[in-house]
Length: 128
Image (cartoon, rainbow, N blue to C red; front, side, top):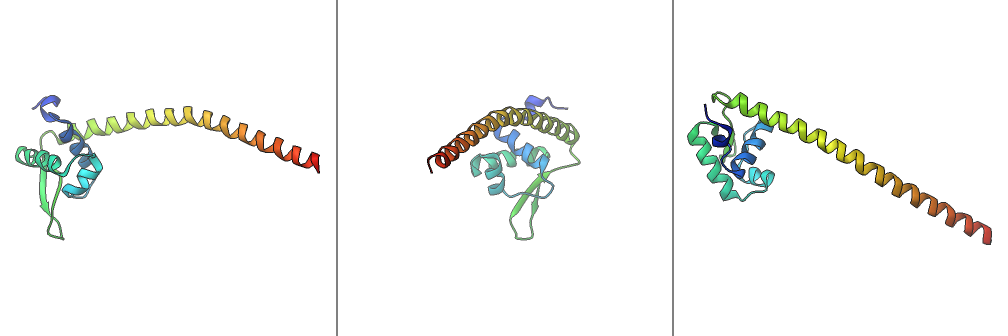
């Protein structure tokens, strides 16, 4: 069994594996490049290495283009899947906390704006 360092030897490989772990259908190189914010050639190179290792399957899509998906029979599939699922959960927890923190400041800003509008309306009605 390989160490995680050997599995995730590059950022592109890590991001491609993460994308494929979250998606159920075969994905094309360009779509994976968009999802991972990597160049198509970098994604293609990472995919070719992982296909050779047996981590990823290359499948012809109905349109005749190559599609890629995780090979569920690979010995490290469950380990990789669990790692990305745990990472996704942690990211959601962090994101929720950040959104709650920002929501307070946005709420304060909106309350202040409402007070200014109310004060402006009162002064308009007082002059007429």
